[in-house]
Image (cartoon, rainbow, N blue to C red; front, side, top):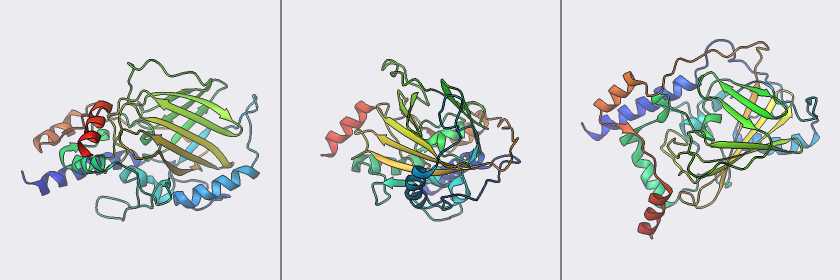
Amino acid sequence: MNELCVTGTAAFLAVSAGSMLWASPSAAQGWVEESACPGNAPAVFHDCALEAAQAFDPLRTAEGRPNLEGTWILPGGQIGGALEDLEEHPQTLDDLGAPTAVVDPPDGKVPMQAWADARRREHPQRHFHHNAACLLSGVPNTMYHGGPRQFLQTPDYLVILTYNSHAYRIIPLDDRPPPGEKIRLWNGASSGHWEGNTLVIETTNQNGLPWLDQRGRFYTEEARVVERLWLVDHNTLHYQATLEDPNVFTQPFTIAVPYRRSTEERYELEELACYENNEALMAVSRAAGIAIFPGISAAEAREAQRADR
C-alpha cells in the first residue's frame, strides 16, 4: 500500500474519531452567547478572561467556593480546533480549522524538541488516533475534544462527565500527593485545590499513550499537567492547561479554551456507545497497516535526545 493511501486512511480514522467525539447528540448544541469575553479565539479569550475574572464575584457553594456546576460547551470553531491541531490550522476536507490554542509561548507554537517534532510527523502515517479505538484521551486532551461536559461539585470532589460515558474524571479537592510512580493511568492521577476563585488541578502518573491532537503530538509518562479553571461570568468558564515534559518539549507551554454554559438548563448527557478497542474499526486500520500508537517512554525520549545532539 502506498504512502498516500496509508496517510489518507490514517486521516480518515483520526477525523472519524474526532467527529465522533465533537458531534454532540441532540440538545446541548446551544450556548449562552452573552459574555464579558465574547471572543472564542483562545488567545483573545485568554487575555480577556485574565482581566474580567478580577472584577467578577461568582455564585458560591455553601462552603464559599465558586460554583462550577453546569453543562459546558466548547463554542463555535473550538469544537474541533485543539483536538485537530493545537496550533493554528485552516479548514480542509479533514479539519474544521481554528486559531492556535497555545497562549504561551506567544508565537502560538508547541515547543517540541527537534527529534520529537520529526517523530510526530510520522505518527499519522503509522498509527491511528487513540479515540478511534475508544480509548481515553488523557489530560489535557480529554478537556478539549468536543461535546458537552457536565461538572458536578461537592466540597471534596469535582466530577467531570462527558457523553463518552467512560471518559469521566473524579478529581479530589484536598491537594493529595500523587500515588507511587508505578501506577500509570490513561487520565493519570489528578488532585485539585483552590487558589482564591481559581481551581488548580495537577495531574501526573499518565501512561503517555494518548496524543495531544490529531497531528500526532505526544508526551511521556513523566509529563506534569497543571490545569486552571475560573469563572469569567456566570455563563463563561475559562480553562487553561500548562504541560511540562522536558523529555519532549523545550519548555513548558500553556493552552486555553473557552467554555460556554449550555442554554438547555435541564440537559442530560446521553451515553455514547463507544467500546474500548472498537474492533470493527480496528480491523479496517490493521488491514491498512496502521497500528495503535505504542507511546514513547521517558527513557526512549532521553535516548532520542542524546542521539539528536
